Amino acid sequence: MCTGRGGGGWMRGERRGSARRGGPGPSDALSCPAGTRAGLRQQAMASKLLRAVVLGPPGSGKGTVCERIARSFGLQHLSSGQFLRESLGGGGELTELPNKSGVRCRDGCGAVSSSIPVPEVGVLAKQYLERGLLVPDHVITRMMMTELEKRREQHWLLDGFPRTLGQAEALDRICELDLVISLNIPFETLKDRLSARWVHPASGRVYNMDFNPPHVHGVDDLTGEPLVQREDDKPEAVAARLRKYKDAAKPVIELYKSRGILHSFSGTETNKIWPYVYTLLSSKIPPVLSDEEN
Image: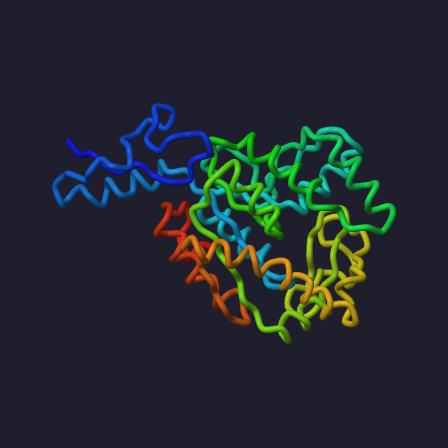
């Protein structure tokens, strides 16, 4: 008979090792033969609800890294940008997204999101966008808090949230994060990537004309609809955009660094950063795909 330790990643207001988690508490000592400890550790990792965040400036490859993590570890990839597009595109109604990345999800979930039962978020966001304004923190925060409350019993990975200290503090009020990944990419690399980036507005699919171009120049691979270059991806706007991100992200990064949950990865190529990210996640939760399968 072996006893193991409970895991982190609980939602605020729950106790580790409580009856709803169905396991021993954090103070229970690991007591079992050495030969079974590896299996026990795997069981503990598998039962633990992982809450993770990926931070990175525009053009850092954050979306690609999130998709690979979701596919390799069966986590829900929760993108604030995708949720916002759904709420806008749905005209205030619930919008369902198919599982587009083929994730084998641990919780029977979609890869990016399921539905947005917050029609007023779309209405509010549209009002700001129609006036050429950024959607304010409180609207994005309200949307994300609603989505996370629905996923209290699921593994998830946040992409695009939190972007500011206010959003990070709101996230603190409902859950405790297990790890935060920060992608550090040189300025020149970011500038080159963003200047070559074109998007499909309806889906958010991103193409890079240098290393990930569409099959047919200027049109989306899946729909055949035209691609556009965002105003803030144009060369003259990139530097200001990156400075704005750095200013907003600095206190968020410092917050998670002070808690000992920040893991930073530096480089110029996502494919070279990825093996280190995979190794980190493998120490937290068993993968559903090997690194070679990704």
